[in-house]
Image (cartoon, rainbow, N blue to C red; front, side):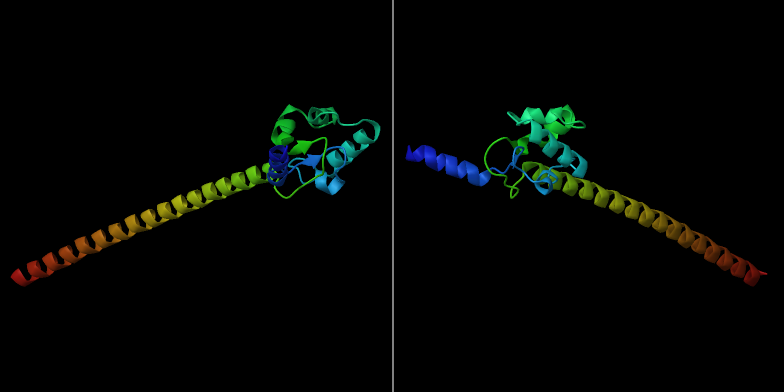
Amino acid sequence: MRLFGLIALLASLTYAAVNLNTATKEELMELPGIGEAKANAIIEYRSKNKFNSIEDIKNIKGIGDKRYEAIKADLTTSGNTDLSNLKTKANNKTKDIKKNSDKIKELKNNKNKEINKENSKNKKEIKDKKVKIKKDINDKVDSLKE
């Protein structure tokens, strides 16, 4: 019995969820894709119907399968709302980091292209100067021969 209690305690410490039946509007709005209008719709729905399962959220206009799949890991219909460790927030942070990383790579590639272009331009200028100097030297040598 103690082992079960310990497991339940540990699970509650590592799992965060938004209780659809008790969460405030602000707490609901912590979920990705849930703005003020959808949070109000959830509260309106639960004033007339209890959320018996997290899938009941799909009864809210504007919350379909795609949005449900994105937030279901952080939904519950019992217990306290705990926003401290939302999985969807962690996933969004990971996506943001990847997006920023991709932007940095793109900027770096663009800068490298600019540098390569400038280097090519400089190499051409140097080559042109060498050709001009050789021509000038040849012209002077020719003039001295005459």
